[in-house]
Image 1 (cartoon, rainbow, N blue to C red):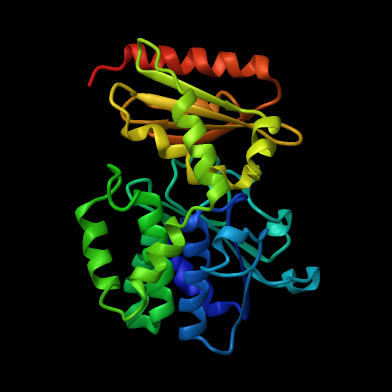
Image 2: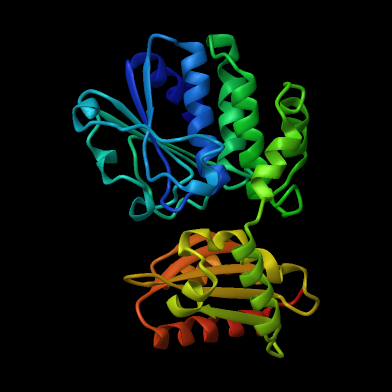
Amino acid sequence: MPITSIIQEIKTYHTIIIHRHVRPDPDAIGSQAALREVIKASFPEKHVYLTGEDTDSLTFLSEMDNVKDSLYKGALVIVCDTANTARISDDRYESGDKLIKIDHHPNVDEYGDIAWVDPSASSTSEMIYELYLTGEKEGLRFTKEAARLIYAGIVGDTGRFLFPSTTTKTFRYAAELVSWDFDRTGLYDELYRMNEHISRLRGYILQQYQVRPSGMSSIKLTRQTLEKFGVDPVDTGQFVGVLGDIEGIKAWVFFIEEDDLIRVRLRSKGPVVNEIAAKYNGGGHPLAAGASVNTWDETEAVIADLDAACRKFKP
């Protein structure tokens, strides 16, 4: 069983380095940092590091470490919440002695010496809590900080328990987590705080969107538009779901222009979108996926595919 194998490897190695995906969300940081918290609480003598780019909007959850190349020698490397190797933040993930994958996305890109992949889980953070529960009798310990981090990851990836990925197990775990005395109100405030420039761009999107007869909508955010509102492309994840409450929209796509490519963010209330993302250097969940294209002409092909998926979809 992958969980018991992972626990055994954690017990074996003295140095453990934990990665996650680029452009992190609360589940990426939450699962990564919570895993470290559990390991450190259980085995204080171990050296456990977090690596990846820092994101200002998520430093309230955890900050990354400055991990030297030399630390990878003989180390266990664990990658959380990352479906494919192209999206792993920090390309040194193969520099360790052994590699483990812990993820809840469909297992399209199989990597790692040990892989624990559970697409039925609401989040990778939920899986980290399950790892703790499985290993509790073998010496794993839990803390209030681990509870805060895991709860943040679950809330983020379930859309505050609204998404279909939320299960009875998710609610049961959440109930257990809130029994720990962390500042839940403060956590929600940090997770959903929106700067003025973000809110103004959100208003612009709500004024500009259009819905096709199929129920598909698309938004193109050029670098010029982002600069006008003072929004960094990395912060656009805060409003990708803004069209989800609008009646008549089945699925939507955001195109966000970055320096070297155009980021594609797909969301849906029914039509499967990760199969579309896979055609454009991406992947993800059936109702939430990401990809990338190189030109604005290519975005029209994505729009056509999403429009077709919406036309075929029958609730």
